[in-house]
Image (cartoon, rainbow, N blue to C red):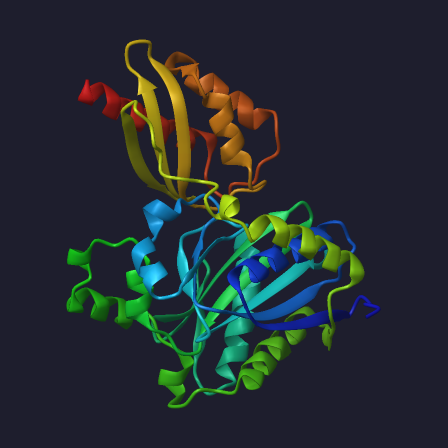
Length: 359
């Protein structure tokens, strides 16, 4: 398709394997960043899948035995955030836009604009949906769509998940939650915090009706029209390259639970910018960080930032911690939303303090 300023592409890629959907994320985002792909609204569905945030460990976050027994694929997203369960009872929606078409790079403002538009669209189906900051859409105080966005250079990928139907118990069992915490009461409590279109409407709405409601609302918000399209040749090449990497155990197991003969000291802190966990293999005799692993529910761009920071801190003396972290972030442009280098230093120091207490 030849896109004009007021015509954006509409993609409906149907239900796919998790690896294919994640590879499509990367291809569309990279294509928009390189300006070889147009502004795009994509609708998608997943075969049953447990999706890790980019910085998370499958061993730490997921009930791997349950996933295997129930045929649930495990994949790693290209964005941060927490682990989620996705299946055919949910409809995914995604926007791939250039920053100049948004008028701002402020993610708070972007989230509000997009979510309020999608909420208006969902409401035309016969419910009253509202945006709930920071990035949820709710009906009567219950979440019906979670969302999140990330920039790659000047390109934005903004994603949402709309609950058409939903099995809350399966979602909880996919996550690595102790069995004693999965009581009937806990499951009922989780169920009370979310809702879905089938329960609200009394029937399962047609997929085409939901897509039309959301796309119409977004078209009005951005004063554009959507034209159905397909991947162009350049995007298809990017997709093929991405799939060859993502559809592989090395991608899923990129971040693993630390396995060392040296004692591991850990801590987890929740900040305004997300939840960050650090595990440190620490040489107490020489006060050196032999190895360090970051994980958690955080949004950071470029995606490799924490992996590169791990390398910078490896085998460093604890007295040099602050300088290494601050120099690292001064030497590169990193978007961490509201997470700061000071937050990272804080969580590392807490893990080191745990090491001293254990001495």
